[in-house]
Length: 158
Image (cartoon, one colour):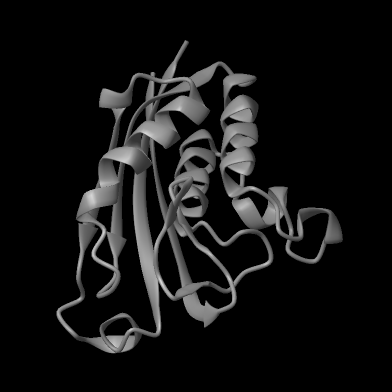
């Protein structure tokens, strides 16, 4: 059995926080606003994995109304979600993530993000793809107000 899920996340840029994407801290004057560490790559991939398993979404599993998740490590939330779907007899076979932002340029960091995600999920690094795209100057992303991530996850029965 093969199952596919899609995840999406977006966050505004804010000063005073580090920019963490795919478990990698990226040098940038602004980070992302959020209840947790606001790692939009981890959030989108978490939703893709949960969606593929029919297991709800990140907000249901880790609600931002719960103080326990304040400043949480989103890579740990991702690992926990993957363990949940593994408990249902499914495991991540492949994931593809597209980060959409004008700045910073993420090309130098995508390999590190892929490796960090693979390590945290316990999968081969070749199973995780991270790409960086711009929004060609359009919308809130194009204006540099924030970024968005789209992720697809393929789960297979173990």
